[in-house]
Length: 337
Image 1: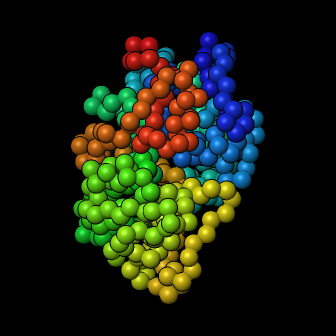
Image 2: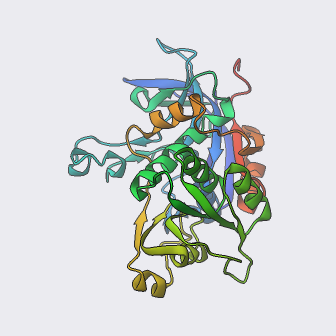
């Protein structure tokens, strides 16, 4: 049987034993080792949907997935999945933007179940081998690192640039580490939680600013490029105020609800740009694996809580409370099952 956690509505997660998943043509059957919980999972859990769209049916969440191939020629191989499955046929895909495919299937979204289950069938070409030097609980974060690398590409981040990261949850912390790996200077990192600011400093942020509940950081040094990783208007506003004229904000965070807002004055006066970051592009997962395997970017220290699949409810309550950095659920107990 396949142990599965399904979201039926807001804060309504239910565990069940279902028939074991079977791999179709060109798919691999994975025994799931670790699933990272992220901001989009938090939205779905608290709201019963995301971006104003409710879930369409009881859904298995989890798109940051690492596992072990259970059968076939690649049996025993440790892999991380690319959670996005583009159609490869539409105009967007033909333009080289497959990660923005309007017909995309995505793990833990719409009609496509994600990784919070013991077994998962996934397209073989979306499963990347993970070397033994990368820990099981780091495997899910390779997808997050892929997004960070894509965000740096979109922002034109380069060595010597002054960068700001506004929101220091797991995504923001990985963006900081990616920026430092290319020689950018993270001159400001903001968050409302002191524990996250300590993690930002440990990740390579040169200076920190605590954002009090009343809004506004203690200090706002000038930055050449800004990464908003909180999904909150205050973070976007701080990013806009900090940017030099002509600068660019990369909107990595997922906002609450279907609309987002920002302060207009600084954006207009400085002719600032805002660019959304959707997900990693083709090739970014391989880049992420190489960066960690070679030691250029470290993921150690980000996971602060592990939960078994049977404790998925408490795991999501901890996610809702933002009481940890990165939470990992482990459907598979150890590498030997």
